[in-house]
Image (cartoon, rainbow, N blue to C red):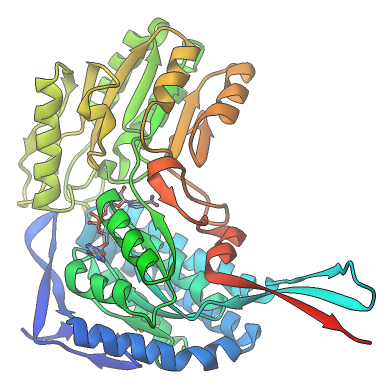
Length: 480
Ligand code: NAD
């Protein structure tokens, strides 16, 4: 294969004997590129390079670290159209969504450029005379970052930027389906002047590269985003090998719609939350919990809006919904659509494969009504443009259904009642609560994460990211 995009190991672009072909899910004849697949030995070399580079980077002044992150952020923003196009080509979200995500990645780097300089400590008066107590934060060491395919540039950015800002060195493994955006980020970090070995990119299989990162005693911490099954496995291995770890995993996020909701607001929130980005968001509004008085109007209005959505090539002007990311994911979506039907769900609209000018994984967004919260469609994450409606009597039942899930990432409510909005905000068992907004769509400077089966460990993003990427030291000094 010609022009293989190489891995970045100790500052060198290093090819491998194996490569994987990155194919555009909007057009299976469009090859995004060929990307090297690292093996266990190359992963080990990347970890060694990160370990060797760590002391120098940890000792670099926060101004220097911030300047490099700022330069990377500026480069991402200057190239946002090209990077957005690349990620839409490899992942399938629309160009507008791709450019939006690239912009967000640039802003995240800029934010953490500032955070590098804002890392503060604390001083306490000791209980003992003449003793000072000083609390400081230090970097962890080599951090392993393992990311999913659904946000190919934003999730790598929100892990890489804080890891580097606080003085850690990084070994990063992107998802197999979307190496292109991470490769572009690696190139940008090199051009921004990051010293060799501080950031290493190892593309390849989870079972090879991912396992090697998690098993290595030289890796101090793991930040993982992906599915529940992989996350739990990684968590168990990380614990066994004494690592700090954080896991961001799946969701089955409820959007409650009450009788007193503004219908337009509720339908808009459901449409965006459930189906934008092809429903492939961990925060997607996949369970729509709707009270009796508004139920029929809501379902009819949502179905009408869904039928007007244009599902087509991600780069085509006017496309609202791009393709599903891969044939495996499409199969999974179709399987759950069949399961929901077998369980007695009523398919209101969508759910069928679509043909377009180019061959791709196109699926008409699907809405089920008359579902029960105990059905598999309401308990398991589909991760596609599929949502189901659960009809409930009143707010109390809505809250109980919303919380009746093993997940707890995001929860939303559409209502004009301050009383119900306030109660929901306090009692929803989720890491993030949205009022009159889709369950998806968060700010890059606010903490992100969930509860229950969705997440484990410290929050990501904003100033809260320091909880994971630093370790606290308490020093007692007797000055005499
Ligand atoms: P996945 O779990 O299949 O893969 C995630 C990453 O783990 C990939 O890089 C993969 O190669 C790697 N991996 C796989 N097996 C591994 C192993 N044995 N050891 C180490 N690494 C391994 O997930 P995915 O299909 O890429 O992403 C979809 C999932 O991600 C969904 O469940 C979604 O909800 C979740 N997600 C969660 C959040 C969040 O913040 N909570 C955000 C986005 C996506």
